[in-house]
Structure formats: structure tokens, C-alpha cells
Image 1 (tube, rainbow, N blue to C red):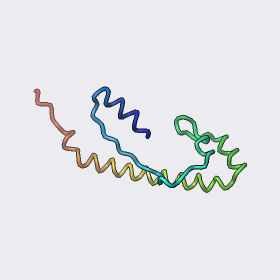
Image 2 (cartoon, helix red, strand yellow):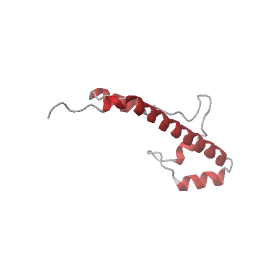
Image 3 (cartoon, rainbow, N blue to C red):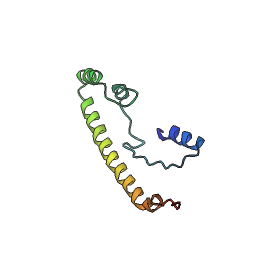
Image 4 (tube, rainbow, N blue to C red):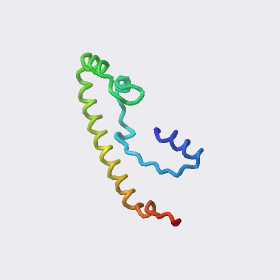
Length: 100
């Protein structure tokens, strides 16, 4: 998935890492074919394409709404997991430099 290239880069430079992911859909769910074309390569919405797609297929609005809600839920869960990870590991990051 998206974390794969980051993991490979970190491994090649021996950078410590942890991957925490939030999943917004189940394996049995699929997106309509036109949805990935509604964003650019960075995931930013392409407003003109969205308007055209909705004009052609108004039912797409329900799929976009569901996708947005699932993304919000995944983002909140990711935030909670990251907060817990930091809380549990904070002592490891508080090491003081022994030199004067």
C-alpha cells in the first residue's frame, strides 16, 4: 500500500520507523471506476471533474458522501492510534544528553 515505499526508503537508510494505517473500506467494497479520476495524483479533488461526474450520474453523490464519512472515521481512528502510541512510548523520547 502507500506505506510500502516509505518503509523501503527508511530501511535503505536505516531509519527507525513504525507504520500506523487507518483503513476506510473493507476488502469486499469497491469504488466506482470514475471516483479515482476525481482526484489528482496527490489526492486533491478535481472540482470540474466532480461537477461533470455528478451531472452525468447524480447517484454518485451518495458514494462520495459514504467515502467522505469513511475517510473521516479512518482519520479519527488514526489520530487516536497515534496519540496512544506517543503516550505509551513517550519515555523513550525523553532521554537526556549525558554530556554537560
